[in-house]
Image (cartoon, rainbow, N blue to C red; front, top):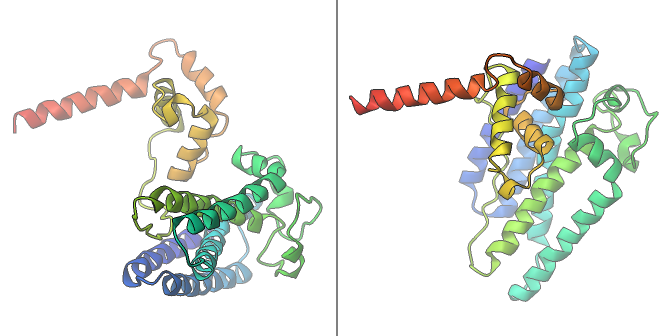
Length: 281
């Protein structure tokens, strides 16, 4: 099921990429994108209804990390369509007020959903058996009212809320880009967020954590203000990998008796070797 779902996601992203290049009109582009997403969601739903998940872990993985990637894209394009269709006529001041108002709505959403937003963004999982398993409505983190109208064979209490968070974060970046480029008259291209589906971390998790700590120590993200957990979660999303407790892993690295920077040393050695070989070609 998980493998099939990721295959469908790859196909969807390829379709959305093609659509984004084929249609210049943002409203038409959004309509075509939504049609494609609905089609692939229907395929996904039929698969879920026809087959059982192999384990509870697979079901949680699907409803927490996979299905929301489909649904969030649909929400995002609907928001973009509404933004473009409702955009007022007027100069830069009018447009700026319009975009600022939309950003304010998003900020209100995140404030209203702080509890679940923190649970999700901090990578918590102690309630996953309640939130991302079907036929379970015991816990309510500001549950969407229309949840009760959804097909509970293909929905959990919070997979849509994850999708909403993902879509709103993407929509917020779009609005910020609109505002940033407004004075420079630079058009903002509407593109779906593409999963780096061909990029998979094939070294050990410990090696990746060693790299993350090195980058954090060097303060290369957000001028050194990025939190180590935030960086780790970004890498987890990028490479579709679960790193677990990075603090415990870092302690294991620090407690190495022989070489505390084993992976970094190998990187440096191999990179120097590569450059040396290129000099003689």
